Image 1 (spheres, rainbow, N blue to C red):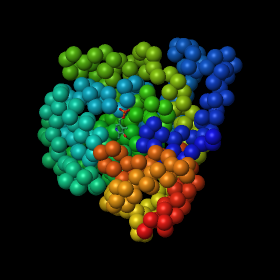
Image 2 (image 1 turned 90 degrees about the vertical axis):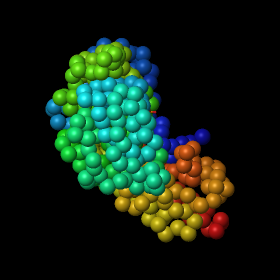
Image 3 (image 1 turned 30 degrees about the vertical axis):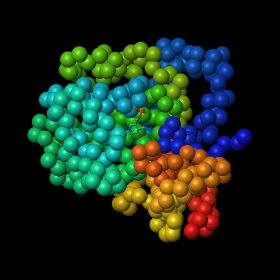
Amino acid sequence: MGRIYNFSAGPAVLPEEVLKEAADEMLDYKGTGMSVMEMSHRSKAYETIIVEAEKDLRELMNIPDNYKVLFLQGGASQQFAMIPMNLMKNKVADYIITGQWAKKAFNEAKLYGKANAIASSEDKTFTYIPDCSDLPISEDADYVYICENNTIYGTKFKTLPNTKGKTLVADVSSCFLSEPMDVSKYGIIYGGVQKNIGPAGVVIVIIHEDLITEDTLPGTPTMLKYKTHADSNSLYNTPPAYGIYICGKVFKWIKNMGGLEAMKVRNEKKAAILYDFLDQSKLFKGTVEKEYRSLMNVPFVTGSDDLDAKFVKEAKAAGLENLKGHRTVGGMRASIYNAMPIEGIQKLVEFMKEFEKNNI
Ligand SMILES: *Cc1c(COP(=O)(O)O)cnc(C)c1O
């Protein structure tokens, strides 16, 4: 069987070139006689892998020298706790609730201090991003938290909130490396890599040096202190070594594609194929207010649960997989991350046209 077009929200499609390269190196990584999976994380060969991965990521995102890059474990969800444990000096933080991931982070923060929901788009099932130009930011807030791209609902912050001088923390799991971003505007940028960068098991944290201190909440485990990992360049204990190796390959793939500017152009072109079709379709309808549409996750519905189910089933038979919407939302969702080829989206739209013709 050949490869299908995989529209999964995560773990998700990876560049075929990267998978082939990893396959070629599986038994013997560059003459070491072993797989990266079998290699000591203290070896020379592995050191080169992790150092180069960090260097390439810094180059891609133009990360200033006063930020650390950490390769950690525990998924994005572990950051929901690690952020308050490390940053809540005043025990106050402000959260902007734009979907379930933001809400989960918000609920976790409540375990450690006073978390305030200062804006929300829940009133319209998270189909938009609230106006964040003049929010009631708490005077003593340790940080303001956003989920920059909402994987489940398909919205994205097009402008960052006005934090009135407070530290901005952003979960970018599902838009990581999809377009350029100004790292200097954030205190922390983090994301699980299984959406747009690599295999599950790695979370990347880009953190301003000033936020890395010994002064964490009492009882914070050693493993959950940013300082532990920053001091040892992500090698305090055994890191998710193979996952980081694949991330490194994806960084090189993006560099070869022309970097994040080129990624953005490509992603806009890809997303437009699908959105343009949705905007004129008589059967399918996008669920998100236009100005907040994500380039990465595109939810849509027919208006009938039966037709939705039929669509997902027939699409799968046509080699277009994982189009079922999130279990809490229903309908369909096409996740069209960096590694989704333009042909995949063209094929999806062709299929939707045909389905529309036959079912209207
Ligand atoms: C998938 C996802 C998460 C959860 O990631 P895990 O690695 O499974 O913990 C968090 N935030 C966003 C935006 C996501 O898309």
